[in-house]
Amino acid sequence: MTDARTSTSRMAVTVEQADATEGMDYLETRGRRLVNLWLPLGVIMVVLLFPFYWMGLTAVKPDGELIDLDGTFPLWTWNPTLKHITTLLFETDYPVWLWNTMMVSVGATFLSLIASIGAAYAIVRIRYRGAQWVGGLIFLAYLVPPSILFIPLAMIIVQYGLFDTPFALILTYPTILIPFSTWLLMGYFKTIPYELEECALIDGATRWQILIKIILPLAIPGLISSFIFCFTLCWNEFIYALVFISDASNKTVPVAIVTNFTDGDIFRWGSIMAGALIGSLPLVILYAFFVEHYVAAMTGAVKE
Amino acid sequence: MADVPLSPTRSAAAKAGGASAWTRLQTNRNWLGLWFMLPAAGFLILFLAYPLGLGVWLSFTDSRIGRPGEFIGFENYAWLWGDDVFWLSVFNTLLYTTVASVLKFAIGLYLALLLNRHMRFKAIIRAVVLIPFIVPTVLSAVAFWWIFDTQFSIITWMLQGLGLIDHQINWLGDSTMARASVIFANIWRGVPFIAITLLAGLQTVPGSLYEAATIDGATRWQLFRFITYPLLTPIIAVVMTFSVLFTFTDFQLIWVLTRGGPFNATHLMATLSYQRAILGGNLGEGAAIATAMIPFLLAAIMFSWFGLQRRKWQSGGSDD
Image (tube, rainbow over all chains, first blue to last red; front, side, top):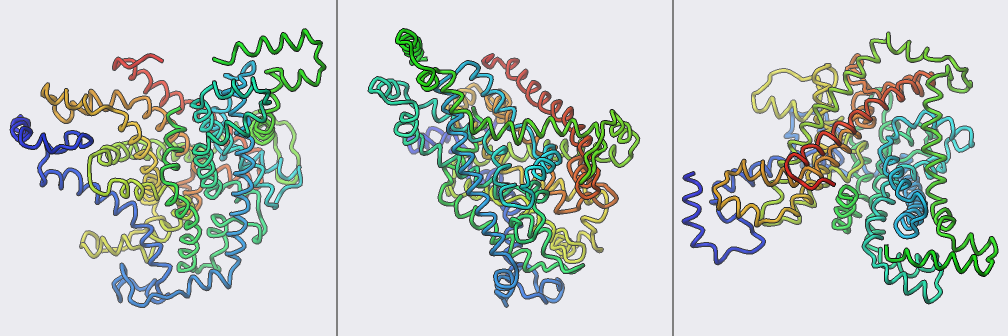
């Protein structure tokens, strides 16, 4: 209670300068703020970011320093080398794996976007009989995890003759992506006023023209959000890529990093870390440009 | 709702004019819906609903890789019932899910509350917090694999430097430590997602509620308990449902870090089914393990969904 009393006395002084968005944070002294806010925040941030620092450091450390924690100070290096990165890019199939990942991700993302734009528009705007139910079923489909599907799916892939081809992944990833992006786009389509569509219908536009010329241009933020999220999920996918692909030249980055970088018992840590770092870069760059869309996608899908 | 009146007039006009089947296919609401749904429905039926059913069927057969199986009833399940490794994997999965989810929620909520405060560099800090979630799980798991290395672990080096331990810790080689390590890696990856989504929920809580309560003499804990928590419950329910679901069915993290070892101490049901079905070739048995996950998943979804929803009614929230 003493707290409350001291803060009320201070409130009178500072209330004029208080920013409207600041809330009641000005009631706290600098010292308390340091202990209550910056200290825990700092600890959490260090823990969250340390693996990336360690990844980056390992990628540029000479081999000798990697396995000698006592001789040199391991948290820094004075002899950075690009050896691991050049080995990775010029002596392994890494560029091929990056290309495979990129191709699969872009292909699967486009297929899913086309499918989910149609589905979301039909559910929200055409509202055919049973649209509510279908919406619910699509949400349930989001809850079906790949780890209970990969065994039967592997059989189906073999039956269709898709095993060990990029199409095995391009055609199966949409099952993970469509439920999510349909749900996200439904939210965006709902915010577009009906009147626009009614005008277009009166002017003789077909549903297809309405979708292409009116709805999609207005839903561009939603499209960007779902594109980024789908692309990230594709890049991240592991179990299907592990099961459906066997030839080294068809692998994606996540699978190749885990399976193709060990010479017998020797782990080439430098190259593995360089590979993990370079494999993450496209997503981090994409994220840096579209942070707002990314957060909107993540929270939008949860809020619905 | 606004375009509802359009439809009867249009279909009436179509009937009156004796429209051809082709125009009806183009204008009838239900047919139109079907055309638009077709691509999504195609994918989801072919590659999701059908495999789901096929998986359940497979679990009743003795299929092996390259050989179609025959119906053998509950034999796979009966065999698993007496299999210690299967029960160990069930225990591991429940332990992994419970511990990781509870800690992820606690730390995620705490981080969200911290990030919701007014501070300098807010936007940058929020963007940086989400990075572990952006980076592909496998690639960050690989970093943990190196951090938890038996001989060259940086954590061991730090702890030794601080004088806390005097011997090497076998992070991924000892049953208890391996469990703790994979749970830690899972929490590390899951916290940003929970924190950022809960933060989005926190931002919708009006500041005036806190101000009013503070004037009434509420403590910090009371502010949290009676304002933040009730208003946040719906979003907590959704986020935790997803979190539990994805933790329960986790595969990649375990596969990269331990492949189920040491002595199956970190085998989850998903990794065990991969090992038995794909590596061991017993598709039927693997499918039975995967199918056995479904009741647990349903229970987990029900628990986090209804459990948290009820609290929402109790605390006087809207009953929708």
